[in-house]
Length: 221
Image (cartoon, rainbow, N blue to C red; front, side, top):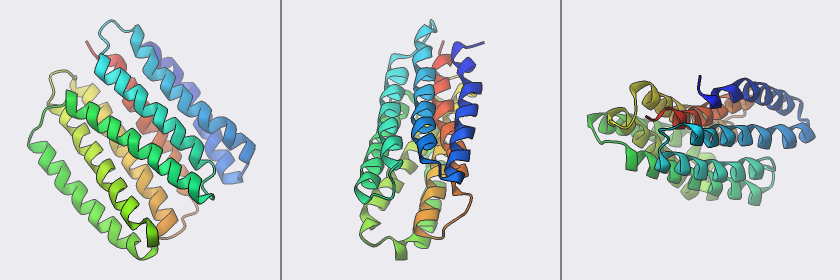
């Protein structure tokens, strides 16, 4: 079994405790379990360095993306502060750009790219129409963010056609990217469309997605 998988049960526990703390608004526990959970995902990616066939571009790129994600996670712990929210958005935007570059460098373009891009375009446009009346000055940042994260998912799909990835490994990347995408859509819906009592469950999608992308680093070669 891959060494990184041993961290998965621990991540499940910390994310569960984080979600419970979010529902109870226990700020100290949130400040503890959120960075710990992200650091566990970073450790998963680091453990791929112990595998004989690790891919330098993928592992180092994912680690860089995760470091920016850590910055975003910390900033969004203070999401009621507008400046902290914008900083968190910027950190995650850069993280998605890094992931997009990694998937583009290692993936292979195919008809699936166009198909996935078309679906994501329709989803993004439909979702934007729901939010636009409540965005105010955030219209431009939200459009940029949605374009970048959609492109990230589309480029993740390109790994399915790459000989560098096994099919199971490529699907880990694709599903991971999709989970992050839907996690962000839930948060945006809660913030700009209609408050949803259970929006904190999106953390399970977010960490599940990040973990899959990090774990995929251990399956090269």
